[in-house]
Image 1 (cartoon, helix red, strand yellow):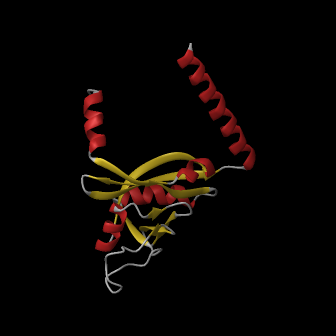
Image 2 (cartoon, rainbow, N blue to C red):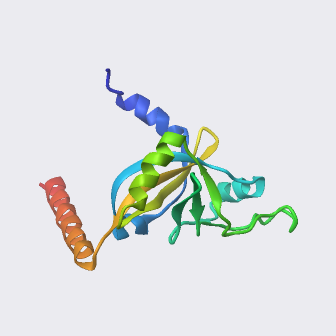
Length: 163
């Protein structure tokens, strides 16, 4: 297997346009595994996402009857659409996954202490995608430890750049 060169990775990133990121998730949860999945949206939701009207801070994914739904993700109503054609801001949205991926993630998410957390939403080749991660909740002392490590790493990197 040949490794991808830097040029091809940059070309892949050109096809991705970031909509929003759940920064709080990486602080609140230890992300063990992640998976890219599609999302079922209406027309006004897509237009609103293109305007960047997204809040993912308290959102999570939930498995119901073999299907995965994104809950508490707020996509603001599109300003140029009529009231009748617009969408609800916090409705449940179906995530599009293969059956084997749903089974794998559902089993892990049902274990004690694990949660399905959306990490990032972006457009990839014109289609809305969600980066979904399996996370284990962090305790307060774990969060403090992680912050200390991050600050120390940042200080080391700064010192290496100067010297």
